Length: 203
Figure 1 (tube, rainbow, N blue to C red):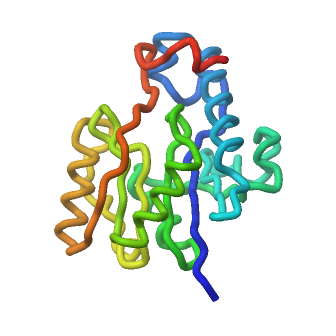
Figure 2 (cartoon, helix red, strand yellow; figure 1 turned 60 degrees about the vertical axis):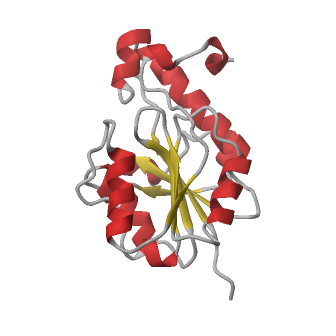
């Protein structure tokens, strides 16, 4: 049986006063919550339900995956909610890499307004030729990481300095040290602070 492509969207259940704290300091808790809801709904509308891959929604807190009635309508029947589990970002991203059924796995965040299905399709295409693929972000991190079968056995997250300018470099170094090939996709920007926002993000 042919292997399945897995798209995993990492997201926090939108709650007022929880998550996106740097953004909330600039725009307030209510607008930060509105941003979370809008970005997740738009991303699910764009990429969930595409027959070229199976879409999973890795959520935090873990209890939000049990009865995900809070999800936007676009997600119903199109995604399967799973808990992110404990640990830092690397530990949480390594979990689906190690536990999902066979096939390439692509992980994206839910706070990158520019992600569309062609980005996801390009990532899976690239994984047919290399072990890993990363989408660089302007802040030195990355908005996407995809791993093929070899790289899934050794996710490149050990010792990565998250939430800073070295996350991409550290992950690529880990891949190279493991003898794995990797490629970069287009650069996109995520939204962490008020200065990253534009009026279009709320339309």
